[in-house]
Amino acid sequence: MYTETQIIKSGAPASIAGALDGTGELVINVGPQHPATHGVLHLVITLNGETIRKIEPHLGYIHRSIEKMCESLSYRQFIYVTSRMDYLSSHINNHACALTVEKGLQLEIPPRAQVIRVLMDELTRVASHELWWGAMAMDLGAFTPFFYAFRERETITDIMEETCGARLTMNYICPGGVNYDIHPNFQRRVKDFIQLFKSKIHEYDELVTGNIIFQNRMKGVGTLSREDAISFGCTGPVARGSGVSSDIRKLFPYEIYDKLNFEEITETAGDSFARYMVRIREMHQSISIIEQLIDNIPEGDFQAKTKAVLKLPKGEFYSRVETARGELGVYIVSEGGTTPYRIKFRSPGFSNLSALDHMARGSKLGDLVAMMGTLDLVIPDIDR
Amino acid sequence: MTTENFKEYITRVLPAAIFDESGEWLNVLIDPKDWKSLAQQLRDSEFDFNYLFCLTCIDWKTHLTMVYHLSSTGHRQTIVIKANLDRANPEIETVSGIWRTAEFHEREVYELFGVKFLNHPDLRRLILTDDFEGYPLRKDFEDPVNMIKL
Image (tube, rainbow over all chains, first blue to last red):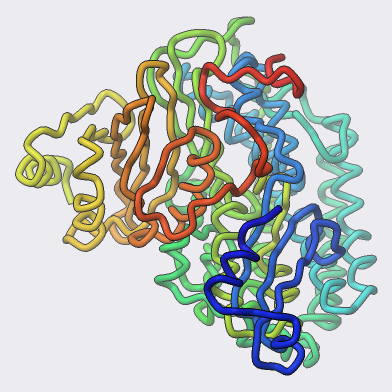
């Protein structure tokens, strides 16, 4: 069915006999159902012995054509679909869409809503990085970190459930603000979480970061140079691990990020360990942002007054946010109606995945898992 | 880089380019024939547009429009390059050799809009199955089996 096997055959004659005696190439499939891909990602890998010659991703196993669907949904409705893209940062996806619609409507957002949005974004980022940390350690052969990560992540999910009514697809941020006010318990529970997180985070370092087995499996593996990271359009921790400053919260601040005190984390090594360290250090920054805001939520409305039916003026609107995986861009082309004429989601995972072939060539098959783990792929975000 | 000297530069190399500043960023509409050489110059000249962060297509029913969002990790300014393509036979030069991220994005546009990228190293379907018929993101696409219209 797939033509690449023919391409490889016509390019460099490969036969099973050649592969067996070590002179030829062997094509193997990883996925679409494979525990290390965390979703339905299909990689066609050309191997010479244990060395990777080429990786071709095959996408689309859960392609729902969200962009086409959105063309027939109103500006209030389409946000709910976007929670299903990168399901680990659904708040931030909703946020990006709300920002684009607000840009078109030139809406002013009440300060209370802005602070709530940022708090939710940062809680989501911590939750997403926690899940990544547990899953990545599991990919590398350790099962315990997964339970450690979920112990803390569960607390965030419970906080979300209380305020948003959902644990995964929150659909909480809407054009104009947020859908409903925070739960009375919200502040107390977030403070409890901060305390819990601070008392447990050292375990992460003791268990994984400082572990020589993990370090040896990650250092020097999947190195991506600064120029390549830019050329492949990598964003988020993948780009920052290669020394590219790409944090949208710093470069193009939205909401109240320009008034907050936090650092953009960058590492220069460009290998899997650098990407790992960026995410670990980012969790501390997010906690610091939450600490700055949790006692300073201004009083007032949680939603600006908007019309029941939203109509964007004719034109093009683009806004971007920093999700847990990188830069999410929402591009809306409006013809002046109640639905977008064309909508494009520039998802971070799609561009980050395109660098996988380049960074994996020449390395061993066993290291591929470490690379994919630190790319932090979420397949619905790639397929859309 | 200022918008003024950038416009001056574009007018010098492409006198036929049309500017539109009504939106957030400067839009430049060019002829698809000029795209490859302009793209190379944009990345290599002092304007240093090394980061292609969004590549997509819009179906206007009469023609297709390719949209390239370019930025730079140095000066952080953004420009948008557009090129109108013939809907019956859409063809444009690939820029995957200039910005490597374009390789995947162009494959996506190729299968969803049917735009043919000339000299693309590996122009195959990325998302859809091999036997899929039609270009789903075109406006006249109707799928009787899978519900897309809600």
